[in-house]
Length: 179
Image 1 (tube, rainbow, N blue to C red):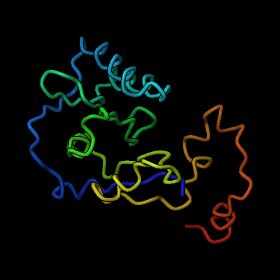
Image 2 (tube, helix red, strand yellow; image 1 turned 90 degrees about the vertical axis):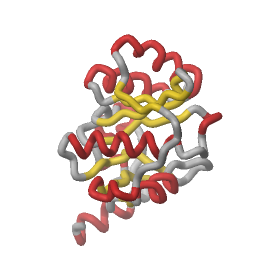
Image 3 (cartoon, rainbow, N blue to C red; image 1 turned 90 degrees about the horizontal axis):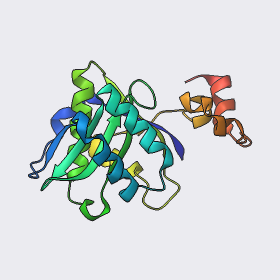
């Protein structure tokens, strides 16, 4: 399945764990350090740097630091209002609960800002290492019905216009029955 997922921000009591890490909003002079981290750890994710830069400018980019080293980042309100991501943890620190804590810090920031829900856009479970199970397990995220990227804010992407919609039966179901 491919689509947007939603996280109920009112479930925040299921979150928290101390990992001797520091999660904080990026300091303005740290921008280049974050960009270098992204180049090193996520060079295949070309659009992430642009979104992280928007998060830096808007104050919606959080970093996680361990032993004075940036080991992860998360943004919100970068792709669209109420959207979470991009989000990444250095490969050597994955599986230690750090991503979970960083996600929780971001969700807390969104809740404080007044959001009731966070949308995790364009999550696909059709590849190895998909974040789908992580979001389901850690934040009780669920797929939003009829949220194929062609019918969300992603439809405005230039590359999305070139992709085919053939075989998208959910749209016909929506037109016939609604939600």
